[in-house]
Image (spheres, rainbow, N blue to C red):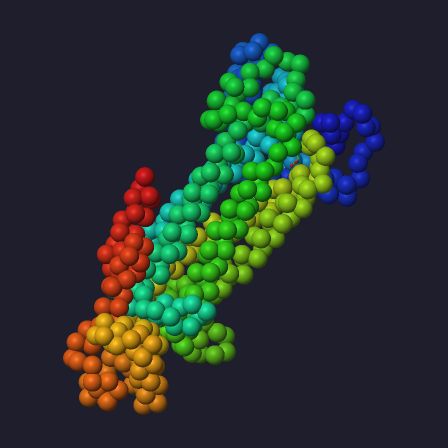
Length: 458
Ligand code: ARG
């Protein structure tokens, strides 16, 4: 079939070249944005007297029907079309005749595709943000439920100091709040209309770019036509933001995988979010978390592909840029699905505070508090440190924990020890003494929860 752009070239392109050149396989998902953009364009052309008002009406009505037809499945996307822009224009012209050929006045596919992609991604950013907030809510609800569940806090994956499980979960809520904030910021720069930049240099027609941008809900327009058609910073930015988001989800995945192992036993995932083994009947695998951790790699790949694709391009549009879409679509789809799975997985996750507490006790993470007890009673810290160390060694040797050691045993190490020592080394006391702002005490967790909930609702 003759190409709409056939003119300069007369000979047919080869079949393989057509296939190679086509983007319809992945850009048809922007059909709604493409048609919405075209309706705004037709209106602008009429307002400026570039086409007649009746012509604009014909175009707008036909475009609205095409939109409905594609959405309902009545009009299947032709896989042999070059891209979604060509497809819509071809259908339009076949339905309304010559007036359809006027739609592309004062426009190029270069500004058209930049417009469609911005509009499409802006919608997807909204969906992503919504899912991030749902996950923050799921984490915050679990944090509230378990704000008094003591667990070992780790550094170097070695038991370090006791913390509350709620405190640990709220750390992820804070990370995700930043992710939502980054997306909002990314959208602010995405919200700039390139339409009217045309092929690269603007146009000789008396267009109204502000009118067109406003109809499409943009806050601003691109101020330089070369930049307008060649800028894909918003793709790279979105990919970076999603990469950071996935990195966060991947870290949480790693913890969930550890926590649900027999060795930790801190949480148990619901059957709805685990899988079994085809051979080992005892297995309950955290596949969802593992997949999110694995998919993080491919999102990073999408980011690298976009950066590399753009780095050597002279201004303005180059066909390389058609490669911007699949990666960013893949990243958005992947992140969205990962978030959705996580919301369900986190909200149904069963927490096992008894196991967390046992691990906290076995880690002697209150040994510092034991030394502090002696110091407060007048013993120099170095001596107190030494005695506490010997008591820990004794406990290890006898399979005991500090909390359960009888007072008489303590007094064999130092006669300073009295009954009140148990209060000081109680893990609950240890945690709640850490009541500095942002610390792990219960009141601090409560204020973190309030802060996050306020952010989610405002
Ligand atoms: N399918 C193309 C893309 O995704 C549309 C723009 C084509 N422009 C051009 N000058 N060939 O980038």
